[in-house]
Image (cartoon, rainbow, N blue to C red; front, side, top):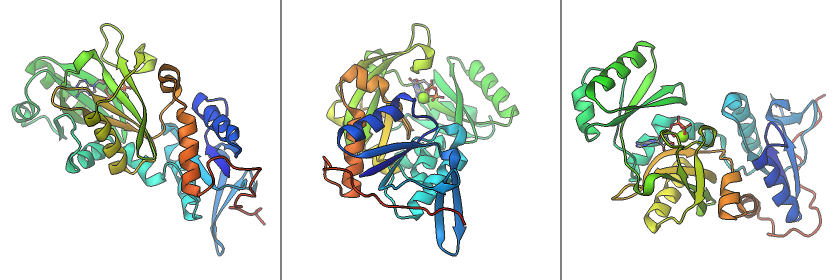
Length: 310
Ligand SMILES: Nc1ncnc2c1ncn2[C@@H]1O[C@H](COP(=O)(O)OP(=O)(O)OP(=O)(O)O)[C@@H](O)[C@H]1O
Ligand SMILES: [Mg+2]
């Protein structure tokens, strides 16, 4: 099988691991920078080129599209899909995962537990909002376009009112969310590949911080998902339509609450903390979608998806 990873650089940990895992299983793998792909729509239908020349033979695409190049990157993924190639993940699902409000709406409508949330474009009806999310403290999440840009914990109504006024005056959308106290002081990140939870981490914030992001000094440990959290993660991936994703959950009493789904998750912490070959799971799922044997014998010819521009 020929695997093309769409990524800005072959040196990025997850990209490198996917290439290694593919080669270790006898497949041909390469990295193509989506910004160096040209798309053409003509009489021959959609065609793809790489730096003005043939697009490499490809049986399956693994997009790793950074949010900073979302628009062009997703157009390239779309083009691959138009050519009939399987991809993990598809462009519509990646785009959807980046729309934080839509994700929560869909999950909630599909019966996946999410933190109680209200969305508003003006601060009136504040009392009602606080009541709806179960009282103080609450989290105010700022949204710009499809990206989330920050989280504020509000312990008092006054803090909430002034936060909302300031944010909404800046013309930003916002959501107010129930502050869910996780059990055991951390939240959970489950990696779902092809409908299976393959690894899970517990993420603990640095003392005095809220963010459980690596960049903010959070710590990661291997976690065992209880069956209910596992079902929630797998269901969230299915609802958004993602073959590969990380599902962030708050490990709350009464059941895990999903608050975010990442369509191009970094796998380093999961591989290191859990000792799980997440890249291998991704490649094996890709092979299933292509219908290639799990361990290819020799190098297949691959499917050519593009011609040299005339
Ligand atoms: N409803 C909630 N209740 C309690 N804690 C929450 C809630 N939602 C999110 N958090 C915590 O706040 C942190 C930031 O929230 P979230 O991930 O939604 O925002 P973000 O903009 O993606 O920030 P980050 O880059 O830190 O992940 C998360 O690490 C999570 O642990
Ligand atoms: Mg987050």
